[in-house]
Length: 278
Image (cartoon, rainbow, N blue to C red):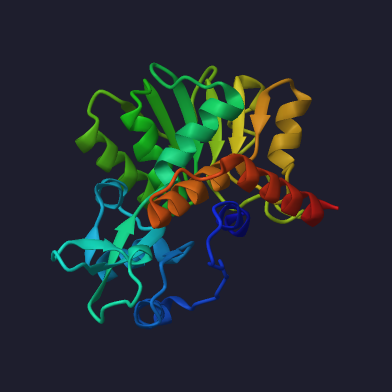
């Protein structure tokens, strides 16, 4: 996806994947700084850990409490910090600028894939970890009416509820399953990645038929047991591919300063996911 965008922009860049143990994150970031990387993406479990390792945090990272995109910057002759892309020879003094593109990607994907309008809606959110916390805070900022939080450990969901109440006191946050219908069921857990996984909610306490729409952040497999169940009862349903696309496109825009070719990136992503599912 990123390489397709890079190619369409005519850049002599390459996007590569590296597996880094959490204990080695700081040294990996320092290595990327010294090797003059233009930027990097971070995924689980690095997004929260990286917060304290940045030289500067964008408002998006401060707001959502996680970093998934890093832009490397240096000072130009005028003493201004600018993206490394703008330099021929990179100065030795390079800083790490942390951003979060996940939060906006969540709401953009829900609008595009499900035609979802947030204000005044009731939402059941499954999972209060990194992705779930970001989703909860972002949904609350969109002025939903009620947000029901369900997590394997109650401590995490209670902590997220506290954050929401402090930032968005008009949003009603309930720990546990709702009674009656909801406008959206959003899965932010990892349940569904494996074929043997159980559903990410307790069927004794909630039925998918009580939700108008279902969104699963998992994008591989393309149809999780949750999405299959949702489609079977007539719910509007979508997986997390668009969320992945939009957070990646925003990251590429941060590194390049250019409008990115989302269509080319989407095509590459769909081809990759299609090959993975065949």
